Image (cartoon, rainbow, N blue to C red):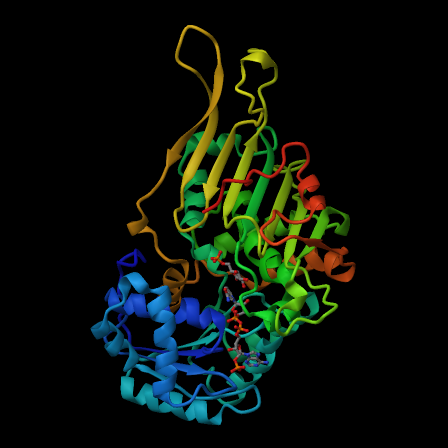
Length: 477
Ligand SMILES: NC(=O)C1=CN([C@@H]2O[C@H](COP(=O)(O)OP(=O)(O)OC[C@H]3O[C@@H](n4cnc5c(N)ncnc54)[C@H](OP(=O)(O)O)[C@@H]3O)[C@@H](O)[C@H]2O)C=CC1
Ligand SMILES: O=C1O[C@H](COP(=O)(O)O)[C@@H](O)[C@H](O)[C@H]1O
């Protein structure tokens, strides 16, 4: 069971994946589609056409390549019969920004085969600097007509290119068929953040600057760039992770109660947060690069590209004035984690005296794990049982069973197939985020080296102030 909420897609689907030989397609998209098919969530009739500039060989060779990813990344769900059925629906047709004629023909044939009512989903899993030219091709060949378009993040590379890209998308596909994907929004725990905040009277009353001292959004990764040199060299971690995933999480933590849980209302509330988000001061940002990055294949010997970012952001509105939002992410770090930490202010007087604490001086914290096990915990002070008075920090924990957790890509693929835009991002919020990021893109902080397997450069540890980063040695997914 995928946990992707149990509703099967009914209309026949033709899915075209651009960048089908890339990392995302291999690790997430094809294994995700396979798992959905195996769980009976795909329609009875569907086909998947992979595309890209370089052909991986015959259709059989393409299927073999995809089989490797499915065996590795959907290992628990792999069985030969299910794979054979899925593989029979896969093919590859090359295309490029300059030439989409063969692909347009393959799509026409596949749609005819699948029959009336077939929906076409075009999935652009290509680097941001390739997206606009690809949209031009989809428009010129007629491939975009009647199709839904899923676009991977980051959307553009800065404010100017994002605006151009949005204009190109608007010419090719009406907004109700555009799905700008940020897979962090498909993570179980991100939706749980909304539930936590707005289904619990208790929490919403303290969700503001009067009670919250800091927010940390921390997504360290143990993996290095895993051969994605070309992507990292052209994109960097600030664009890859901060202007996208981490800012989206910040939006969900900080937004006002939406009128309803709809795409329109969530986007409107996030946009309000981002309009209040102060343009990021480069002095509040630390860029790092892991030692050995420059020796990776495809990386320039003098590359200044950041594989690590830590920063402090401020939301200048009524609710959040004066509360620092600390964001951190990087490759080749000490642990992998996806953690939002909300630190509450201390009570006004130290009634119990410093001597009775167990040595852990941290304030109460609410911790939301965004990883595969979307746990929640509230760390508070309790009295140790016994005659004396000793205070300990203890967690009230909620840990859902792994079985129920939907994979983010499966959830969002299903939503896109069904035409549900609720968890997809809007053009206006993305453009505003680029505006907020612009000072850092214009005036990049120096890139500082950090050892592989560490928590990043020293400067980043200092950025968090005396409290430090909530995720530290011994923590992680
Ligand atoms: N990898 C990951 O973990 C994640 C990636 N993403 C996003 O997915 C997208 C793809 O990333 P990823 O798969 O890692 O990248 P890769 O570099 O591994 O793959 C990108 C694919 O795009 C194609 N491509 C590259 N340049 C161009 C171009 N100029 N025109 C047309 N096609 C091009 C390549 O195929 P060919 O050369 O054959 O055309 C390649 O297969 C990015 O936007 C990334 O931000 C999002 C979430 C996670
Ligand atoms: O979009 C991306 O996300 C992954 C991290 O996603 P996760 O769900 O595994 O946490 C990151 O490794 C990749 O660089 C980036 O493009």
